[in-house]
Image (cartoon, helix red, strand yellow):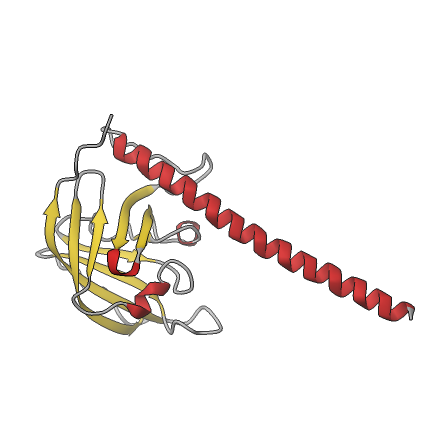
Length: 198
C-alpha cells in the first residue's frame, strides 16, 4: 500500500509541475505580447525613431507590424531572426532589405506559433506591413518548399518584395529539419500612415 501511495504522490507532483510549467509559458507569452505592443506604440510616436526595447534586457526591438486581415493576424516584427527574437514574434532578417523599401525583405517565424497561419494562406491574399513612416500592402503570388542547405533567397533590388519563411512541414513532431516554407508577396501600394493623436 505504501508503494502505491508514493507512486500516486509522485505522479500528482509531476502533473502539477507540468501544469504550472505550461501555465507559466502561456503567461509569459501574453505578457510579452503586451510589452511588444506597448514598445511598438512608443516607436510609432517617437519622431527620432529610437529603438524602444520591450523590456530593459531585451536584445531586440520592434521594427514593423505585420497584418493579415483575412486571417485576423496582427504581429509585431522584431529586429533580427535569431532565437532571441523568434521566441517572442516574427523576426526581420537584418541581412535583407529594410521593410517597405526597394529589394527583398525577409521575415521568419516558428511554424508552430506565429507563422502557423501560413499553411492556410492563399495566392492573391493581401498582407500589410507597417513601419514607423509608412504602410505597404503586399499581394501573395507564390509559395515554395525549399531545402535551406542548398537554397538562397534571391536578392532582387528592382522590386519591393516580402518573403515570409517558416520551417516545414507544419505538423512535424521534431524540429531542426532543413526544409523551409516560403511565401512570396509583391508590394502593391505604399501609404503614409495617418497622423497619430497627440
